[in-house]
Image (tube, rainbow, N blue to C red):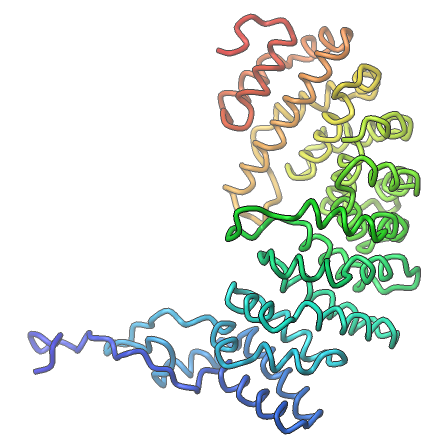
Length: 450
């Protein structure tokens, strides 16, 4: 009797892990490697498309493959599936990354497959080791020279995917000239929306500190380098477009405006008017786009010299309307309230203007919100966190108005802000405890810390 079989029951001992090359991604990668070695252009593109399909996953094919007993871990004797080794690592270990890079610069299937592959640290590490950052930018430059928006967008998407959560590739892309490539794409009036969106994604990936492996991040330095290449000014130009392109441009502009000098340059290029026009467009932007525009204006408002221009442009009225609306998802309300907070910080004139613009009522409405409503992709926990962050900004806005404008204090108290601040502190002590207490203190309550 074999070990593990007892009482006539089924054998529950798992078979040793199989490294069968019949895994769908391994089969597709083998075909790609063979096509590259044979220098058959048609077969290479077909194999890259096949790999992309395998990476994206055909569950029917995968299920059939598992029932045949293939794969890492296989099935036990009673048919209980073991975890499927994710397709990207299988393809990476089979040599997909260098094979795909060999098809750049002018292969759309290779770029889309490479983007699909960049889901794990292992795949991104393999691309970095193979010098993929330079290859991707070479592909982007070739696509721009060939006036191929599909290829350019695909190359920039691959750059964004490969540098997400990978500090080394972020640095390699910036050093290899990402700023110049992206600035050129954003500044092109005739660029397709997909190109603007992909360029924005590349900027965001390069300037986000999302790799937890290194001790430090160079996200700020990357933002300065992109700004030096003119990405912020080019993004402001793209912001004057409509629809999804304007939303993407706001993201790129915000990510590239990492210090006061760059903010001032963006403002001089017309950033305030462009963002306000995007918010006032007809039809109005959806919640996600509006959030992007408010976030960019909030970034601009962090520079004291730009604050008067923002107030004069009427952004406080726009922010108050968005923050007070029950239809605004908490993530949108957070950015609108954050803009109010930024414009009232160290700015008595801004605080007085906020009172006149209806921000007192907006703050109270945001604090009085019990349910997060729509948003966060249907995740209740994420929606509740978003509401907590929005109410933190509401507390901060109340504090700044009370501290910088004497007329704001009776207006806030008359509107009933005190119990709302106390309720926010009790409900979200981590997010609202400190700043809610500061608001109560500046409103004159001695028990502000209770």
